[in-house]
Length: 263
Image (cartoon, rainbow, N blue to C red; front, top):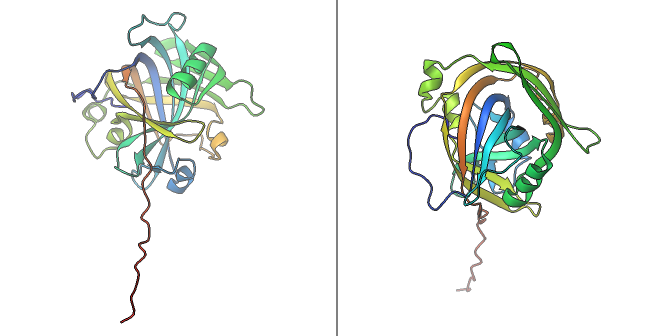
C-alpha cells in the first residue's frame, strides 16, 4: 500500500470502493521465508528483503467507507480494524503486492461485506480503541466464536516524520514494505484474486509501541517475538480499491515426447 505520496498513474478502469484509514500502527516481524511460503497459494511466492519474509500487523480505525455510486455507508463512522498480512509476488509475472491472512473488526455487517464483496478473510471480533494522553492509542482485539481466539493488545503513538521515512527511498525497508499497489486474496475454493490499489496518505512516521498480547501469528503456526523488528505509524490514508480479477497460475513446463525412428 503506497505511502510515499509520490504521483503515479491511476489503474485502468474505475475504483469500486474507497475508505479512509486512521492512526495506523504498522508493526513488522522478520520471519523465515520457508515458514511464510507454506501459508501461501501456489501462484504466489514470499517477497524477500534482507534475507527474510515479513509479517505485518496493523491496528487502525476506518471511516468514509463508500461503494462507488452510493453514499457513505451509515454506522461505520469509526470502525476499529486489525489487519494481518505479508508481502508476496505473483510467480507468473513478478508483480509485488500484499497478501492478507486475516482482518478482525467488531462490525458484523462490515465482516459480511468484506467476505462477500471483496473475498477478504474477515472475522467478527471484540475490537476497542481509545485515546490516552499525548495522542497515545490503546487498541484491543479478541476474535469471537473461536475456541482459541486470536488476541492483540497494544499501546502506541507516532514519533513524527523523519528525513528517512519522508524520503522512503528505493532499496530501503520502508520502500519495500509500503510501496505496494496490489492486494492479493483467495476465495474458499482456492482461487487467487488481485485488486489494484491507490492511496493518498500523510507522511510516514517512526513509532513506539508496547505490545501486551499478540496471538495472531499462533493461528498461522508462527510464534512471533514480543518485540517487532520495525515500527512505523501513519496518521491518515485514503485508500481506493479497484475490482478484483483472477490470478492465473504459472503453467508448468510439460515434457515433450519425441518419437525416435530406428535408422
